[in-house]
Image (cartoon, rainbow, N blue to C red; front, side):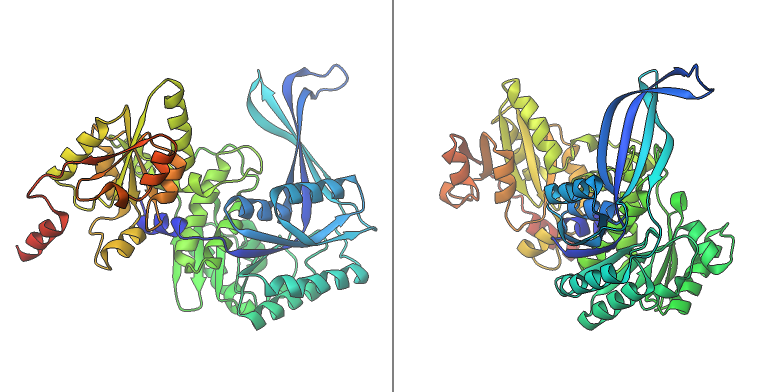
Length: 497
């Protein structure tokens, strides 16, 4: 498990991300593909569900919002029922749509997909119907977009351009976007169109064409990672970018950076159900990580993970930080077979759901927390006593950054994934969950243990979360400490050896 990516997810915060581009409404009609029609040799779909989601630039905004960003959107909808529906969904999701302009002369872009299930299972996309205008927005609408754009850039930590060639991302508007962002020292990352003139992306910090798009833009067939790196470097130099990035689906992403870095970041093989939305998810995660201060290398690696999770789902579906973290924590099982106890390491939402099921069957929950940097016999005895207090034991494990806050810059000796796996391998430990805060108070409030366990070197009044637990009827248990066991002294002895 890449410990630095776990750390990055835990420290993403809530960056302010502005998305500029083509607002779309994705409509899905689901049903059973029962037989061939008597009217024509086509599959007859018996529809049983209709669903609407946001697509295009608004899909990127949706994914960012689900990942915890403060998201704003600049784009265009028509003066029609589909435009009203898109605005309603944006509002329901908490996305700032103050920069979405209504154009009375064009329809809202809608992509309607028909999803058929064979024998009530195995859903597959059968056909897609598009309703759209590809003409550039008129001058009056462009002026309206320009007017809102400046204020939105002032409030952003990064700007993402999601260009689907539906008329919003004109050369004039993108020039204003880049100039405004440069004045603020804010990165602009663009997901470009297929074909067309890439000159309008000049001055962006980075662009992220896929294999086909990059090949068309550089007149090159990209059959190898070397071809991808050459295309990325050519686009970087031609457009004055900080970084050229080419997405390579199952082969990962190629980065050609201004500082000389030329790297292909591979990705783990996945069970691909639907590639729809994978590019948007990569864009959203990359932008979020860069906005949080990450360098391109870890941001791209994290985007690879999120894009991989997206293709395992049907349609354009959001991915959460908890899902990414769970995937990172379980990465050793995908790569090298199942590790004993690995299924005990859970993100908080999944942990809470598991504990709810246990409580419904009458079980009680004990909780303790710590760094558990170098596990020794004293820890094992302590955890055994903690487990005896209830029917299951949850261990809150400090992240690497949390350990550094509490123990100093030289700790931990072991990264969080190693510490988590060692704890999960113990019989007395039922769950391990990781927290990044300096204290476990927020975690305790979410878990709501029946028994909060801490070492006997504390007084009850000193135990973080003790008042919370006792306030709803739980209790605090001070577990006995075994003489002769100390992580600090053990580390000192190892250094001296």
